[in-house]
Amino acid sequence: MNPNAVRIADLGFRPRPPAQDILTSGIASLDAAIQGFPRGAIAEITGPDSSGRTTLIHSLLAASTSKSEICAYVDTTDSFDPVSAAAAGVSLSQLVWIRCNNHAGHALKAADNLIHAGGFGVIILDLCQVTPRIANRIPISYWYRFRLAIENTPTILTVIEKQPLAKSCAALLIEMKRKKTIWTGAPGFELLRGVDLEAIPRKPVRQLTAGIQAKAAG
Image (cartoon, rainbow, N blue to C red; front, side, top):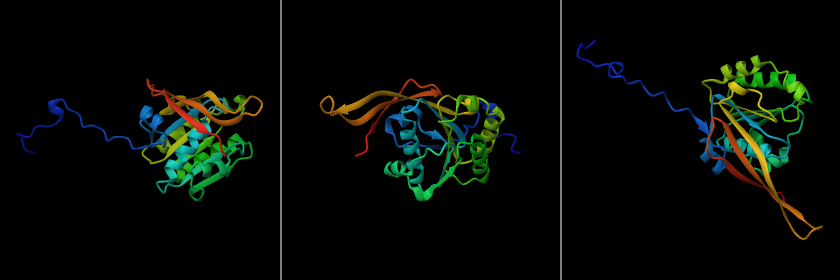
């Protein structure tokens, strides 16, 4: 070694770690708030029914399949609607749909197998309609196992539920809320035109929130 060489460490500098790869959701206001979904990590999307969780998931899947990535949807309670997903831009030919017949244990094992198989852009684990009693009994070891298995991969494991479950194992947590339902027409003859939604980044905490409008079909 050249004795006159100066090491970077001697100058008090540390190499900057490489930037984490992300996938933008396709929703401009949300991407501006969170800078995208981090790959190689767990993301959680929470909120009550009709809060916009499905709208966000469809947009994320559409963004991933538009890049020719293969995605997977683990459907615990058989509630996934491929017609509305296709209408939102999801390429169904690039989506593996696993129906679990209302069995949370099978859903967790399916997600585990998919993560360890590798090669997926986005894996959705849908636990929205799982009862709180069952959801709260999911061992924390599952989330640690998922987090370790997905690190240093291009895959995003996205868990959708009513309340956070992965907690400290998740790198991103978005809470969805419904702000306003939009109707048009005279009273008694009103037509649903859309819903104003709000996406609130809870982890990491951001000052910005994202306004999203979901339009009614037809």
